[in-house]
Every structure is written in structure tokens, then in C-alpha cells.
Image 1 (cartoon, rainbow, N blue to C red):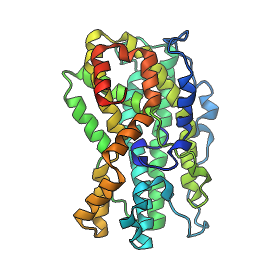
Image 2 (image 1 turned 90 degrees about the vertical axis):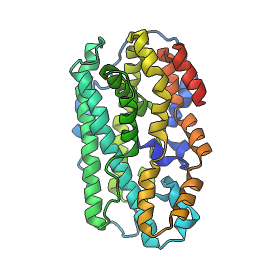
Image 3 (image 1 turned 135 degrees about the vertical axis):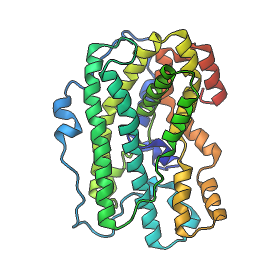
Image 4 (image 1 turned 30 degrees about the vertical axis):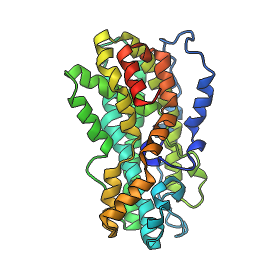
Length: 344
């Protein structure tokens, strides 16, 4: 998960993201290549290459020009709406800062509360299916990575809050985790609930996120933010490969009942992750003395349903390709669910 997809719906720089380039390569791949159920570790050099082992602690530089922002307008579609552009410059800058807070909080919750829950289950061999020993061992490394990503996200949030004096206007939980728990509670048993969480992580780690590959080159953004984004994306490229491998190994080992249970909800998991957190954005906009009518207009015009649907189709191409390779669409109920969702 390099960047947070749902936060960047409508981003004009979406096509520059690293993972968008993966789509082009995957289109030329065969769906039936040798060893697709085997595991190749992409974390063998973890001790020297992982961010937590090799990169410095990122800190804000108090000597940087005051003209720099904490985020780029190009990655915050709502900041370009006419109603927002009519607000005072200080408010516009705060909106960019609040978006950074939302991004960092989202990252922390995803990595700490969801991804690491699955990584721990893999490391402790609790998935009820046999996995390669090397994959189980790599889960320990992945757990450390994700814990570090959660840590440096909240650390940077605290630094920005202290430096800027801007208090985060965040809801208790990002909307994605609330919806994930709702989906889990609809499952028939605990085993199915765990499978939903595993597949949500597979989805979140393999989607074409709105990776901020351009942000490290954005001279208008403070250096520490650009460095954090760069550090995160370097680790996550390997995590993408790890979870793509997990999918290829795990899906064929599920029982028919398990496939019928978890398969049809996969489109929901994709839309859940990629849909903008409108509740959080609305909560923030209400603090700028905008009328409810104007807020509704801003949200509706920035995130029209058609745009979200089209964005989801584009952003899920890599994940869907991985699903195809693993044989996910061979399960009739799952295939039907994806057809109805419009994703395939």
C-alpha cells in the first residue's frame, strides 16, 4: 500500500504512480506460468534494505522556507474546488495539512490494526492452510515493516501538529475499517471473518494506490513529508509481491465452501478501500463555516459516483490480474459478483 488510493480519487497525477506502470507489464504476462503456486522471497535482503533497518529517522526541518506546504494541491482534488479556492489562504493551507493528517492516520490504522493482524497470523502459522516456511518467516519481516510505517506516520503527524499548530480534525476511525468490520460481522463464522480480513489485506497491498511517486520531487512540499513517502513506497513494492504470492498459494487451497463465502464479497473489499472517506472530509469542512448545502455540493462535484467507479476500475487492474492468475474468477459465484460490480 504505497499511498492511500481512496484519498487520491480524481488526482491529476494518478497516471505517474509507480504501480500504474505495473499494469502495463502485467498485461503482457501469461496467466499460466510455471511455479505459480510456489514462493519466491522478495525480502531476502531485508536486514540491509528495509526502511526500518537502513533509513534515517525523518524530522521536520525548522529552517525550511515558510512558503512550503505540508502537502501538494495536485494530490488533494478537493482543494481545487471553486468554493475552497474562495476561502482564505490560511484555510486552504490548513486543508492541505488536514489531508496529510488523514493520509498518515489512514496509513497507521491500516498497517497497525489490519495488515499486521494478518502478518502476525501468518507468522504464527494460524491460517489453517500450509504455507511455505520462507513465507512464514518473511511475515516477521513484514510485521516489522508495517509497524514502522505506522510509527513513522504518527511520528510525522505529531511533528507537523507541533510545528504548524494545526489540530487534526479526524474522526476516531477511517471509514474503511468501519466498513470492513461490518462486512466481517455479516460472515457466517469466525473462520470466514478471518478470511475476509486476509483478503482485504491482499486487496489493499496489491491495488494500484495513488502512489505519490511525484511528491518526492515536489519542491513546494516540506522535505520530511517527501522523504516519508519515498521510504514507504520502497518497502511496499516488496510487500505487493509478497501478498500477490500469498494469493496464488492461498486461493487454490481454500475449500469450495470457503471460496463461495469469501469470493463474492471481494468486489466490496475493493470498493471499500478505494472509495473516498466522505464522512471524514465532511467532518473537516464543517469546521470552516461552510453551509451544509455548500459542503454537499463540494463533495458531489469533487467525487461524483461515475468518477469513483471509473477510478476503481483503473486502480484495481493489477489486483484483478492477480486474481485471474490465482484462479479466483473460476469460482462461479465470485465471477458473477465481479460481473455485477462492473469491475470485469
